[in-house]
Image 1 (tube, rainbow, N blue to C red):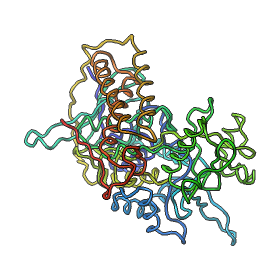
Image 2: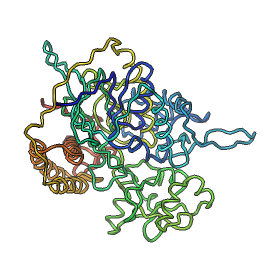
Image 3: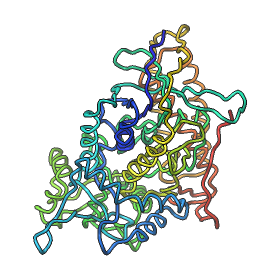
Image 4: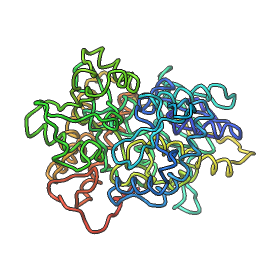
Length: 533
């Protein structure tokens, strides 16, 4: 017998997008937040750089729009860009009212104003930040606010397995989402949860790659679930590789914020010479795709394990004040960034495509929404402008909340959901198979679908993904679910979507660079995939 939980609104994911939405809805609805790990474990917590908005009188929304469009390489949806940038300042003011403390600086008359930093691709200083741990400040502040609300329940250590949808018998084209099957990792039991509205806010899918700056939970769950339910995806070929992750055997996946380069850090070869001026007139402040490809090129050309990021020419006190997290982390590894350069490599960082939504977060399925990194709003185009990601989470969460609040049924009656059938499955004694498939997937995605691609590499990757899918589907049908199995199933699905989108694009644009089609096509079009079922 499957235990059924009930609520008005189910939010799958507990990052900036999910928590913001919950706080906006809690006045009007009973909300459940599903968190795959502890509440604060997600990409938001680890975001260092900041969040973009126009606060400087010398800056303008039109300049923010232009910078976003340029970074997006002609593929942004201009209405989505306009909508996001116009709502940016009010959304940041909402965060400030929630208690997020962004850094301030003293000006000539003794007053204080927000300290704005600049990152690659931005024409002005417009990045609000909390030292170099902005995401942590946002995540912990919103988490504390969520815990105070009596109408918000947080289910920690729960995986969403699949969405539960109801077909409209009079119209086969319409389907509505009424809940989800969830796996309680605390009891190792499958449960269900009914909701009048379901919102996916599960983040990106960078764990599909061998090297990533993302935490372990970034396994593309929401994208895979929505695709299986019948939603379209777009632009999955555009995976942003952050140019600068710390290269050290004990560092794990430690990101070195773009704000380092914004404050003057230089990229150097092992011999100490700079190389970015050879690739772009903006040098270290070029958009991330250009910087990542330059680092990748130099590493391959020289046969080097890494390149170096050097901010040691700046005053020691300045470095410690602006980058305390990075300073402490690198010092713990024996690297003094005030005196020496930092070894770096690129790593998968951000999923620019995702489930197609409108400006209110609505998907192709009634009552199902998607917000944050897992959604495709059209904001990022072929390459995300730095510090627009946290912004997208807050702006679209608020927009979705307005729509959801206006359409909730106050007389909502809970439906009885179909039971989960596990009568024919057994416990697996072959966990090693999952581990093997996991490593194989992430390795060939890195080798064949990475920073530089070819048609032959993509064909090889697709062949391997199809073999893995058959093996995993068979495994899924016969054995009880586990965290690793659920994540692997979702990652393989997302890998297929990335590869198929990449094969559709017969040009090099933004983050998608292929040696077989190095030129731009005259017209920029999004890559859209539609489920066959």
